Image (cartoon, rainbow, N blue to C red; front, side, top):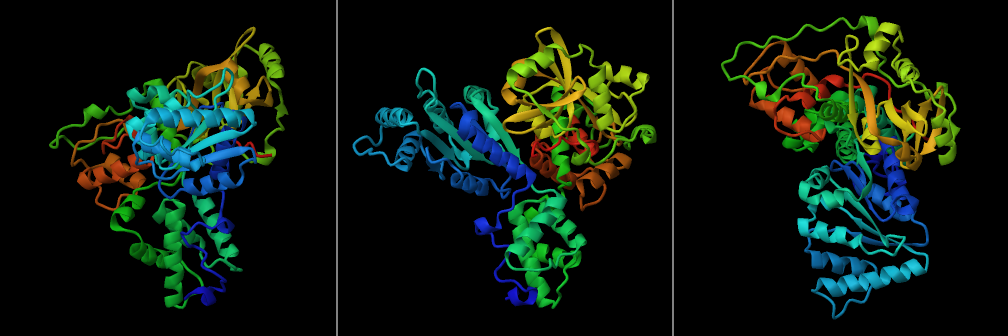
Length: 545
């Protein structure tokens, strides 16, 4: 109906998967790299886990992965995991075209048949991969059966590589104590985030051009509004954009602004979805949420105690004064990659040699991290940072902790790593990381090394900085008002009044669910730090050369 009006050859925002319209953001490329690395040399027979919110593109990445598989790969794809363990084994065997007549309904004959096939495939130089989509729907018994399949092995090689794709609930599920055996076998994790506001604009232009359009009709304000209303989720972007084009046709407009987007979004999005997306902050806060959560657990920071919520008749909230941060204002955008020094590629042995000769003092690494933050490395500040004072300078916070490399990659921030060399400890700055390599600043030079080399000299110790200029430390009572509640309302983009009531609780729960936090509707420490951290500070570089 609107194609001729906008000079299009076909609809640009259909939700039906079409490889011609695929747009890969940097996050999607990183996620695909994790999957391909897992299937290649990186998985070693363990699990590869990819999670993401509904509509962020997990299934699209799975399709791309299947198209890029090497010829020596055999795949069993499970699309409906709501099955019993026996039915799951039957599905896997059917996907691999195995003859299981007479063996159905019993686990042992099915596992024996699969084991024979895997041994034969190994002898032929084939790699067998099991991909389970919507893995959060697996029952406990089915998950346990999947774990047991990793026991099929030779003396030197696992016979089956398993990839789990699922919604964020999968991460929560695998964190359970009774599933720790499975969780310990996950060799690569990646959480796929929605598109950022700039990426949303690129996405819209890309799809519009593929559909035959010569000039995107969306104004800059319309792009921002589409991102705000959809939270950067590609599927919802398609829904809202399609309806916006239709509205533009009806209104006889060739330029579409935010008012048209709002009308289209009000019609296209369900009320619950509208409320949820309105409560979302820009996508960079998702990274900040991860930072806050990890730092809080590791550092034991308690800016607001969750159990300090006062009764409903408590006195009006008083907020702490906000310190003047003009003396040390961190930059709000990542450094220009073009200005980054070229990194030297080191093999594992060369890295061990370099590490052995590195300076034992962490002062140089701190100066490099401060340079990335555009902060002066004066002696007083350096001394406070080296002791990791919680607030070394107004608006800047420090904490130490323990985490995996995948967790630090999800944080998206350069930070310090405590390394163990042959001659003693050393400190490096993590500059970039992908599925196969890591880039470090070490003893005055940027070096690219394998993740395996880093893992052999790093026990998980890190020190991180983050910026937050509006941390309120007073408790919030139910029904409370005042500056702290005003701040919370603004950060949540809450549509209701500035009162800490049930509606704001709902908005807070939606924010927490979207950012992987405990969705209790209470402004606990991790939630408040996530809200306050925003996108201030430098970002990890891209490993793409």
